[in-house]
Image 1 (cartoon, rainbow, N blue to C red):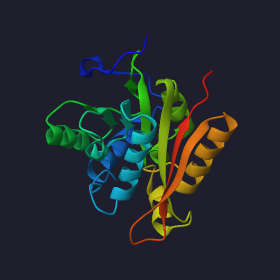
Image 2: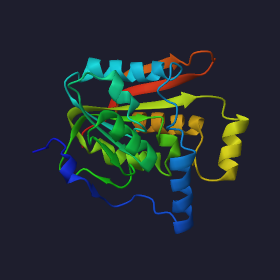
Image 3: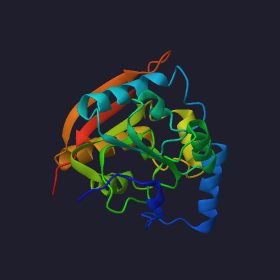
Length: 225
């Protein structure tokens, strides 16, 4: 029977994509020093967090939430005080900041690939601007779809911007901080949902203040095997 998460159960699990040691050190540096987890508790970013919180409140208001790549656990501020929340974050600095902020231990320092849930399951699993940093986003979605309770949902947010943006191309050229573009990741996720028969409960475009760009956010139920 699926169990609620307990912080004492945190154990590393098998990694889906192994990096060479020098690559792993480079990724750690990006996560801690240059990570895009910084500065997200802002008015500009608030609309996407509000939209995700509304989706959770609408579909599973009393359910448990797993936030994959949670940064400083900004989403937690938008959920009810009684929400059963767990965040996992690859940046030691971000996870330490979140734990200090909330004076509790519901943020774990681990990657989405390494996280081992054992027999624990969740009602809602969130990928909030994280999948395009992964080497294999579809494998990650497949892993976490199996960690849902019956009737559970996965929420995915992907920022929509021109695929030929100079900054995006430069970042990809300099290294592997982002393995794929936002546009390609959007297509991959959407194609997976359609191909595998996921039930898309909500599909919203949320405008970014002061910009013509937006966030595309889905709430979907994977088809049970």
